[in-house]
Length: 262
Image 1 (tube, helix red, strand yellow):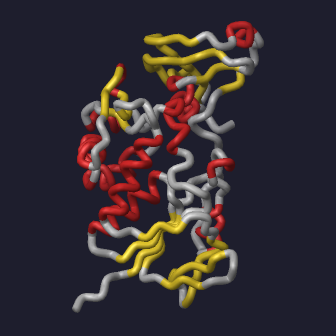
Image 2 (cartoon, rainbow, N blue to C red; image 1 turned 120 degrees about the vertical axis):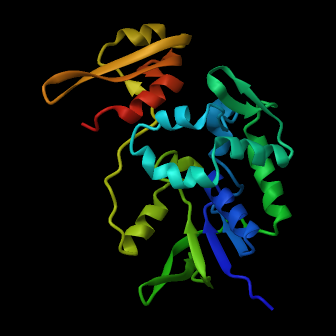
């Protein structure tokens, strides 16, 4: 009789749920650990609560919108690309719709339906889900990760541990940098973190006078100086809005990814 490999996945967000699902589909005995009271807490606020699942554009165009080291993602997208993601959710009973800019949302306009679809798939493949379960550290023995230690001191051993705890954004949803700390403790070299996919403050105060004004089908262009030369950093068409401190919206969030860190 073949003994199933035991896999622990830490983090019940979108990445953790997908990791648990695909490990289970490969025949592993999977346990998903989430410190919050429910799965997918950050998913609930994506796309202004509507759940911007993916983008339906062809893969060449899709990769063109990844500004930093898109080659890093080639192998992952070869296994599951945007179209494959859409098919996965539709097979789970989630009806989708595609809007302007090839943005894909649940037909219901409820981000919670994304989490519900993933939960159905996890249940279907026998994944054990443990909520309100906090991990204290990874169990490192002989230079390898052999499991985890919970905050109450309980040791849980496994053949493999997947850390899917997110970064440092939205601490209220559970993204408090736990996984980054564990990775560093395990000997990995960490790259300094910088804000990304964020609204922007403006030096000028006049955007505050337009607070709440939403613009659609507009082009946002940003220029900067590199090596003494003026250079176009960004130019895309879409949606943005003015806030009391500056600008925000999909275009601005994307722009924030390509701005110099200084």
